[in-house]
Length: 265
Ligand code: NAD
Image 1 (tube, rainbow, N blue to C red):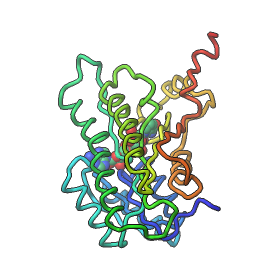
Image 2: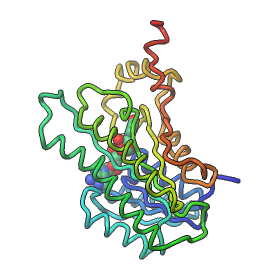
Image 3: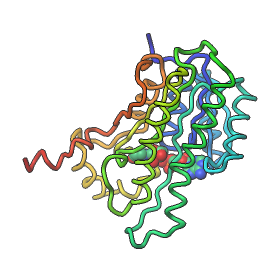
Image 4: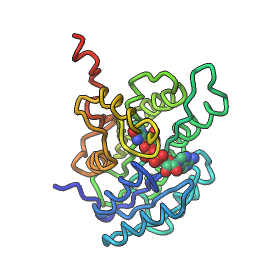
């Protein structure tokens, strides 16, 4: 058995950049038809579509704000209109708005929770409804697959990022609760918790001396690439992982191994 997604349709939110882009390209190569959701940057989303098409795959770019119910409905409706079904959701979109706890504004709190947690809720709910409506399409062992993009900060507290850490802690229990609720229908729900991966979200933090400091937190001693996460994502949504339900795969070079204890045992 291989990690193939032939005949399947995948919606990847935030698919125009970073991890979402990497996942969209990987899924396209694996044979899926890919709906590349974007929030801003239509041209970048269209580039991802062109890259998938140039490899012989099928893809479309669809604009939607994952925090808005009507836009999420329209995203899935467009996917079904174009490709006839949705078999896989990668709820990947996420933002950071960092501030010391007492400086964090209500607006910054709400924006991050709305995108990172409510957005994943809305997309997953719409996906489950769609899986139920279309029934068993016989394209994979599971009737539908959902992958939630979390972070090592679902587990590691992160001073100065209370909104982000709270959103990812929420994603962790949202994912496991949903997995428990829908597994009997043949729907598999899992999560990925990346460590430090080189994308736009942490471009500033990884500049110059910043990268040296981050490397101290990574036992495997390299910053990750979007492809590291994309390969894990492909595995989790493929039939290779058919018995993996409600799991979070940490793709972090060992960041969650508390490397500070290695030298101070
Ligand atoms: P990124 O900034 O490249 O990607 C985030 C994507 O989300 C962008 O394409 C952006 O347009 C999209 N987005 C933002 N608001 C949206 C909205 N309202 N509706 C739809 N899309 C929206 O950064 P990334 O690193 O690729 O982040 C992807 C995910 O990975 C995020 O959930 C992030 O929290 C998570 N993550 C990243 C890292 C890392 O080191 N890069 C580590 C842990 C977790």
